[in-house]
Each structure stands twice: as C-alpha cells, then as structure tokens.
Image 1 (tube, rainbow, N blue to C red):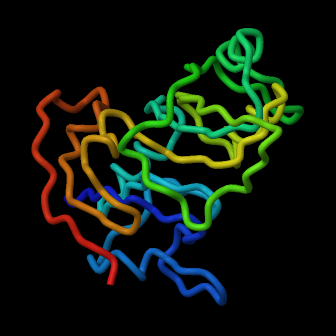
Image 2 (cartoon, rainbow, N blue to C red):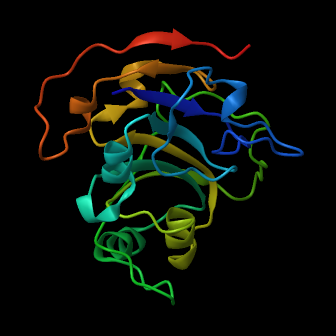
Length: 203
C-alpha cells in the first residue's frame, strides 16, 4: 500500500488525464498506480493525498469517516466574533447546512509560500487568515461558508488531512513525499508516525 502527500500548486487540476490549458498531477507525480483520495479545486492549493489502495482512498474521501480536514482561508475583510460563531455552529448554504466546524483567526503562517500569481491587493480592504476545520467535503464548501458569513475567500490552502500536515512535511508546491497511513489518525490506525521520505521536486 502506498500513500503519498502532494502539495498541489495553484491552478493545477486534481487529475492525471491531460487538460487542454492547465497542468495536471502527471506534471509532478511520477509514481504509477496512485490516484487522488478526494479532490482539490484548481484555484485551491495545498495538501492532496494519493494512494494505490482503493479502500484507503474511500476512507479518506468519504465524509462518513469524519476525517478532519484543515484549511487556511485568506478572506476579504476582518471577521468578527459573530461571523466566526456562525462558521462554528454550521452555515445554511441553501442546498445544505454545514456541520459544526472549527474556526479561528490566525496570523499568516511563516511556512506558507507566496502564491503565483498573488491575490489582488486592495489597499482599502484588509485581509485576514482564518483556520477552518471541517469533517465533510462538499463542492467549494469552505469558499461558500466564508462568503455566506460576509467574508469572501481570496486564497484557500488545505493545510492538513487528519494528522498529516504540510507544515510538518516541508513540501513546496509541486513536491510530494511518501507518508505512513497511520499518520492520518483513522480509528483503525495506530498513533505511530513515521518520517516522510522520497521528496520529489517538479521538473
């Protein structure tokens, strides 16, 4: 069984099949037989897990297993306590209501890379980083959540899935490494953590 962690770059498609205008996983992952466990939108960055084990792939992607996924959202404006409380309680998005989530304002992490291209800078409107932890994964959910409470997301980075965190792996955009599935913290797994290996750089 193989499990790898990839720092998916901005605008890369979460697929191996060719795309007419955008880079795909095939441009940076040269390990045969692995497939994404879940997806990450092209305009989102960060942690994407890939595996050759179908059962593990389903356990990571299926919200029934309630595997925590942590996102860093750079939003337009400065969320107040009321907005954060709404995110924590669950947000009515019309077609569904989100489950209770973790939400807090944070400083921009020192380990975070610069995006290329950067977000649009507007001197009159400040931006704020929010750490949001959810246990589901509807389409564009985090972006819809922050917009629903009045603070549109300008940049979105998935920082962790379970116990696998980009901050611990030291991966730059386009790099990947092999990790131990026990790092996820799924109920059937142990708490043992094995050092990540085989860091690869994009050509």
